[in-house]
Length: 244
Image (cartoon, rainbow, N blue to C red):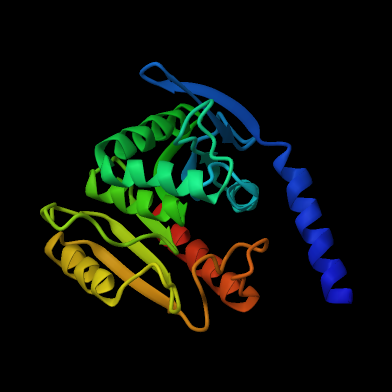
């Protein structure tokens, strides 16, 4: 009971803190986008671009931004879908996210637009982190050679179309992969390792035992508290090494 109350208080505190994130309106062509940035803008600090999961900006992305601000980073939560395009349910999210996975150049362009906003906020060196669909986006940031120091894919989709050639990946890459993620096939992992080796990436893969797809999200039935905490510490270690 005490543990439950403690977790409720923690999540409530993070949600309240997330209200301090500042909205940022920007655009990709004619599409209006609505991101969020931490309150420490205007300072010359390292930055973290957060790509949210398939339903768009959610509490996990907001809470990560607040936590990263406390660690000394400017964090920006990207809006990939744009105003008027927020999925109402899992079916809509699956359809919309699939469009961007197929049209990966459009996905890379949306990430680049958010990255520009983060740099305007004062961030110098930047790492991209992403959850689920956003984890796939983190890999696309690397594949698109966007101007970042590294990427972290957290329970992201790891596959890319078979007809896409492997290219340079001259940055640091951290893949946080739940061992029991039904959406990741063994060959996806094998092909990604081959891709990262051919691309000369500085890469590492950490696999989390007894963990299903959305193991880091406290609101998910897949949540694994022990492994989620480990994954967060691994993320912080990566950011410390690459950005500070």
